[in-house]
Length: 412
Image 1: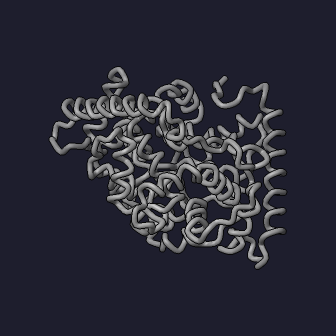
Image 2: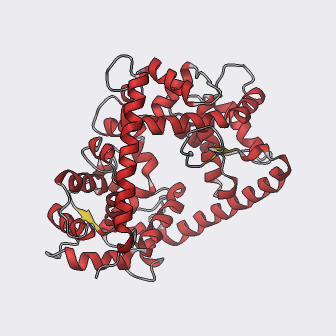
Image 3: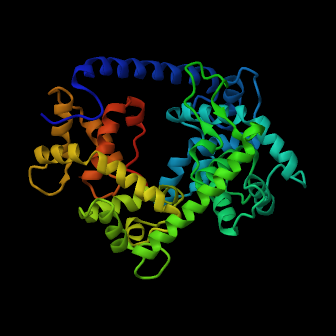
């Protein structure tokens, strides 16, 4: 019998019931939201309808400003905008589009996370927004990051990275809601998970603003030691990058080409050679932020690119996570990859999902949804590293998710 990582067979019936109950609750939530706030009757929430919806979502009835509503729109539509940009469409218009039902929960989560961190963000703006423009430009952001870095100047390239990656609205500056992401990116770059700011937690069932986000800098007593820890982490990070480049960057480009990345991954796998598909998958997963922002025009450009030092840690993490589940994935491929192609086509995936579904044929729409969203390489098949996502999607599937399924996996 093939082992199933995600769900024990004896719990499948209870899990299916829980999923069915979740679908019903989600459908009612969407129905109630549209009934109350979709005054235009479009089946989605436009700018002003979204503003009213967000205002009502908080206990204090906090009315968001225009920039805040735009930011929530961009967060709710971010994935769709990435897909549009990759396909040559107008990503900016997608970011500003009405929020569709499948993104209502995401919109509320983003808004409440921001509301709960507003006090600390306002304090930072009061100190660093010296021209009172209601946004931070690059010099002001650099000054803020330097203060968080214990007074040590932050390299220009890191400031650029934080600014460009957190500028969700694409206006070249950091607005108050965008500062939340900027701070999180900064602490994540220092590789200190305990110091990440903000730490976003799943919202509670009532969707109140309580305990959705924790902001670390408000804890004055811990700031000094935390800054010291961050500086030490950054030193170790730089040494890790230097050691990796010294050993594997044979071309001397300051990055890892496909072959160099393949050699590196093979070495940290006790000599087990990483396949081409596995290396391509690591390229996609370690650069997902860039993929979502449309850095690469197509998959060929992505696969021809070298992995930069800033993505080395992500590359190792996704690779080792995949290796941890490789034994079970290999067992599944041994059973369902009947033509020995090292990939599963749609028919083979359906056969696998049928067995996981206690012999009940999954609906074609379900198979299509899992297949298209798990096909991260965009090659029309499920490779071994992609199977882990396919299984996760299968057990987490939701009718509303399938209705909104894009025409492909992660946008490459």
